[in-house]
Each structure stands twice: as C-alpha cells, then as structure tokens.
Length: 142
Image 1 (cartoon, helix red, strand yellow):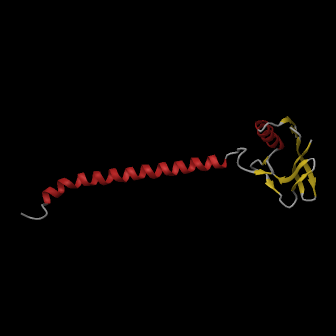
Image 2 (cartoon, one colour):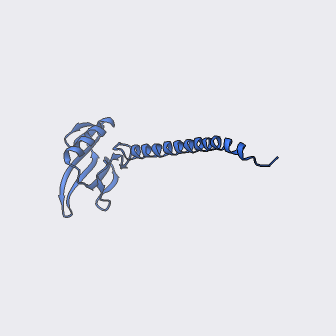
Image 3 (spheres, one colour):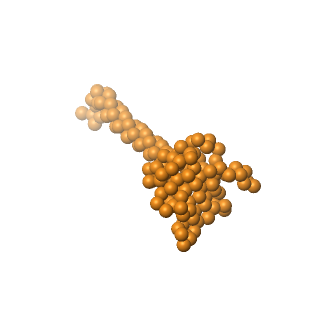
C-alpha cells in the first residue's frame, strides 16, 4: 500500500480547500469589522462636540484656529479673565450657532455674542486686527 493514495487525496482536496476558504473568509470578516470600527471611532473623535477642545474652561469650536501669542488668561481679585483670539473661515452664523448651543448646555444664558453664568460674562465677536479679521472670545467677571 502506498503511503499517499492518489484517489483518497483527490477526494480530500475539495474538503481541504473549503476549510481554507472558510478560515480565509472568517479572517476577512474580522479584518473588515476592525476597519469599520476604526473608521467609526475616527468619525466620533472628529465630530463637533463641546468636549474636544477647551481653553480656560471655554469650549473651542472645530474650525477655529487659536492664535496663542495673542491670548492670555489670569485670575484677578474680581474673578478670572480669559482672552482668546482665533482665525476661521467658518461663517459667523455657524460659529454663533455652535456657541449658542454649547454654552446653553453648560448653563450659560444669553445669545448673540453675550452670555452670562453666575458672576461671569462671556463675549464672542469678530474683531479687525493688524493680522486681519479674528474672533475674540473673552471671559471676564460680570
């Protein structure tokens, strides 16, 4: 009797191929699921949420580029003062809409660039500077 019988091997070959194909498909499904999960997590991480960036307890909208050399923050005897300057190409209606929604969720009252919470006031508006138009976000005692 031969060690390898040609007839028995030819009958087992389709079964072996099916097993290998099944394993390959399982791995492909797992890989596809991993890629989809990573893409979903990336979308969540890049979404416009109020938790993604903060400066001095002020949420910073995606699309605003902070100009760090122009801003400052300090505590005064009357309360804290935070000044943030940012550039953006986002329309002002979208910026004000973001801050109207985000600040309301954080307990601020007001709108149209002026919000109050407790003994603090937050003012947001476009200003002209030597660098060009910028957004000024200012947190100060009320």
